[in-house]
Length: 197
Image 1 (cartoon, one colour):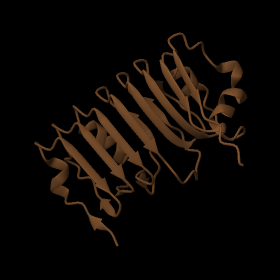
Image 2: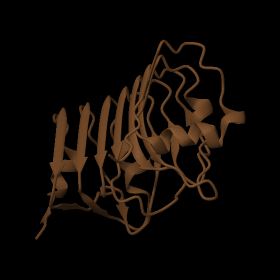
Image 3: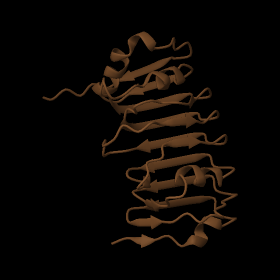
Image 4: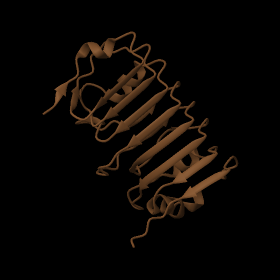
């Protein structure tokens, strides 16, 4: 059973933090506008809108958003829209646990300082604007013939703290070694390799 989020919630002028999790369904109204929202947490929320990309519409309606957390499958249904675009976003966590597709992924987040990203590595990353990124934690499943994380790796070039959470993520750097940029600001690298006992 699921509960529909009231449409009025998406036009509230005073809400600063919005957390929706487990069992909510939502339609984003055309007049969505959350001018005070700084933190948005979506955990297994289903969005139903076919006329436009819900995530893009929602982010453009949050002019002061600083922190966004998306847990699978809070991506738009049925259309997959994987564009994160925000000039104000500072922290971004994406945890997709289903690993079922190879959609393109765009990060247009020039002021992002922290990124935690668990997903299937995308088919391509057309836009990666992560020039302010300080810390990144990656858990990506990479399939050599289906995933191309080259632009993502280039986008990570200014990171200071990098944590690779699985052997698959480490393989990403091995498969695409020639494209790896110089990480001139990197001072801490953590690689977690969990081999079966």
